[in-house]
Length: 153
Image (cartoon, rainbow, N blue to C red; front, top):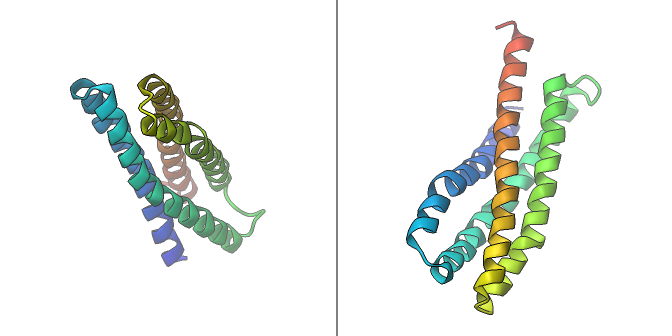
């Protein structure tokens, strides 16, 4: 279980940490110093690189999570593990929406130099990533608290 847990946590760090960086650090600076053409082009490039890592992270998180749940026994998994599974699946669904809908629109808009449509797509991405970031951070808190309570500490 040790290797599965390590890979699981690394996947979470890459995904949630990347969302935190993009949302809290990169987004405000890009919005304040770049005009729409440069800002939207930057985001297409950033997302193109980051989303490659998110796909890998999602795969690692899902596979290792299911593996560890099987080791627990599907019905014997603690409540915090079931909460983590539910939140993780919701986050993955939101990511799929981001990738296949507004990110596709953003790429198309930038290629066509349609900055208004690109800005709208980026706004949708921002909202969905904000939701996913909150879900990810909340899930970390729930798992940490659940493990503490389960261990009596």
